Length: 219
Image 1 (cartoon, one colour):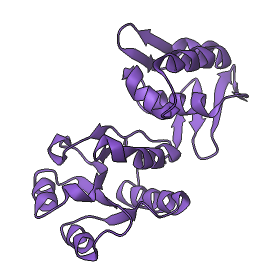
Image 2 (tube, one colour; image 1 turned 120 degrees about the horizontal axis):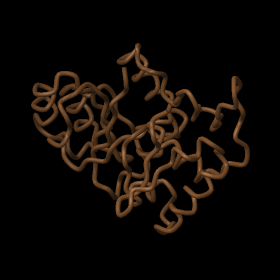
Image 3 (cartoon, one colour; image 1 turned 30 degrees about the vertical axis):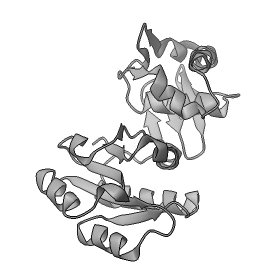
Image 4 (cartoon, one colour; image 1 turned 90 degrees about the vertical axis):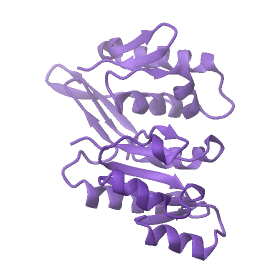
């Protein structure tokens, strides 16, 4: 079973939570409203401001497989947090908490909710293996696997996004979000070009869709 994950919050607040998903080797589409969530099982990190009143109860009634973790600013009012938990939120993540603590809690929720799913942070098919926990990539060489050396942080992050959904096209803008606020669109093209060289024959799976972006072809 494949994990379905989302981030629901204003774009200006998304960077921290996207980084959290990325640390687990997962990608989570960024949505701005709860009603944009698909009717499928999964876990969403949702900005606390979107969980007022009976909003969460109403959406969970329509989407029984939806699980939510509330994301709160430092110093959020206790009564607001309590209301979110009473409405069905599994947990709340504070912006001020350290990354490693939130990663551990998120990983534990995923393991409990989706025990039969592929462990977070792992991608593997007939030609490529990616482990976000140790930030390593291996490619098949005949009957054995070879570690891909010299990958930059940006190259690994872009590959992890593409590997998170083989066959799915990602716009350059979506990939640009992984490269940091100082990056420009052309940086995405340079990263993909570098990946093609470093991945050897597996690099041919990185396909360009003109006017759209890139995808990792299925093995």
